[in-house]
Length: 115
Length: 115
Image (cartoon, rainbow over all chains, first blue to last red):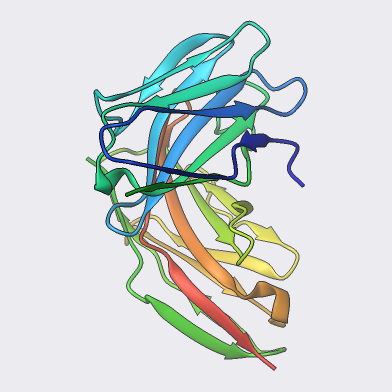
């Protein structure tokens, strides 16, 4: 158990819908990262938040957005869902800002299925 | 843009034997980090080992070691005394520099350890 929690574990929804994925980082971790793992694209970095502020963006679609709240939990919002958005979405957390010095710990992931 | 290649989609090894997983990458950066992550059937992403590009000495973590060839842009993972619990997907990952949290992952190698 990494200490990072993600809810829900599984989510099934229809095209065009909107969903919210939630992540609670390890106690004391200020950084939260979101990743998407799909069969087509593999593992991709989406976005990084540090202490409530967006710090880096990867291959995140405009239909997707995220935020980190004052209690440091984070939410990833996916809207106008398409079949291709079906994937495993991981959240990871780390202590500080720089992953070069701080290990990131991954949550168990949320499996999103878009029908 | 950085790319990471893992040329072996699947590999197998007998228990207690040694196996090497290959990874090559492409970058124009001189300072960067390289990682190997393990994803067992539980889907949890676990850091196996990491290497800082400015360090010439190859990283080692117990039964796991790397062969880092900076000029060749090669970063292979050697697993000694393979155990059944090593069965997993293994991802090689690149991170440009300390300030850039944009991880780039390879497509993965599925390793099966056979009894």
